[in-house]
Image 1: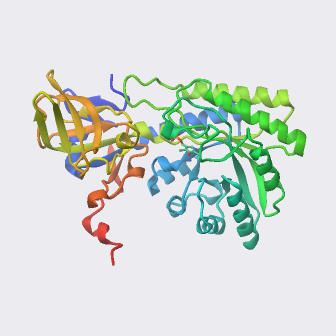
Image 2: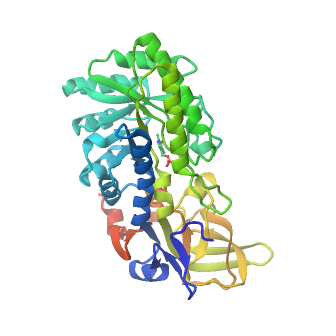
Image 3: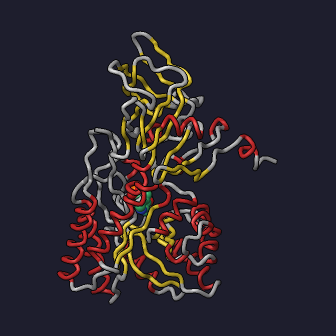
Amino acid sequence: MMISDNIQRAADGTLHFAGQSVPALAQRYGTPLYLMDEDRIRRNIRLYTGMFQECFGEKALPLYASKAASFRQIYRIVAEEGMGVDTVSIGEIHTALSAGFPAEKIFFHGDGKTDADIQYAVSHRIGYFIVDNPEELEQLSREAAAQGIIQKILLRITPGIDPHTFKAVTTGTIDVKFGVPMETGQAFAFVQEALELPALKVCGLHCHIGSQVFDETVFEDSIDVMTGFMGQLYKDLGFAVEMLNIGGGFGVRYVDTDRRVDIPARIRSVAARLKERTEELGIPMPFFLMEPGRSIVADAGMTVYTVSSVKRIPGYKYYVVVDGGMTDNPRYCLYGAHYTVLHADRETPFYAVYDLAGRCCESGDIIQPTIKLPDDTRRGDRIAVCTTGAYNYSMASNYNRLGRPPVVRLSGGDSYIAVRRETPEDLTALDQ
Ligand SMILES: *Cc1c(COP(=O)(O)O)cnc(C)c1O
């Protein structure tokens, strides 16, 4: 069994992704190469839009957290499928708008929005700000007033929930850098202050407890905490929260030992909990939002490399060195992320254990340690790293002045360039 059912091994031993030969795609587009299975992206989106429709009717919208993978064609696909998007920078907003994404369905996140960011997003009339802190609130209020509009906002609240995931991707506990905590009373004061600002319309609340969440009850816990807070706001301030956004973070499978999250079942259970809790508390059922990123694009991606050298240090370690590295996938270096690695050209009964190393001038430039590949792996072979659709292209850098790989979109047996390869001229385009 492959890690994802859009990956197959053909009878001749070659790897196929989204029904297409990986060595043939590598031959055509060169390596390193990001592949994106568009049909899988649409299928993943429809899991959310279908379940949201079933559980909430018209009173809900899933948002794609576009930091997971941000380029024009993704925004076009997301718009066609009727989702909204989360953005965190002028760059993401610009990319979305330039792809024709409707401004009113753009949500703007981030704990460090500058005056320039706020000015840009207000003047482009994006739908909603998710306000992280009181300083942002005050600046946004000034900017909206200066531009003569009423800006819709959600307030980011830290619910104090630990999602039992990697530390680097945890955001819901009390001592994190995102949002305003509830336990200290600061969140209540934050809402009170926001309600007094005439250029802002407080539509509701947002929380996000982390990423790669496999725990079955974390989102229900978020609902309990957030509805409790909504009850308090209703009772003490007469404020009825119209929109509740409980963030993103459903886990995806990178390796065989990762559990499978039943997303439709989780959404159904979260919806039931929200209905139950709002009825108990006598508060109106809010418009419901979630922000999946990884679970929309991760298993739609694969990265393909060509082997440059194989180093066998007897009694110590074997390395397979490829033509990419931490520049196109920094996730193992950043937080020890796991990946499934496959030989793209052939299968053999004889394997050796290698570290898959990149070409960057850092000994820590490892894409994945301790992987099994054929024992005769050699220069010129193609290697595929699976499940790289999320937080790979979007985290890529130009360290060592390496150009970023192209993104090739696969759909219905055809392939299209979504982002072309960066050339040496692109790399000097900004230099004076
Ligand atoms: C990163 C992020 C998401 C998406 O998380 P995934 O793990 O990619 O689903 C959603 N909301 C916020 C606020 C985020 O920071």
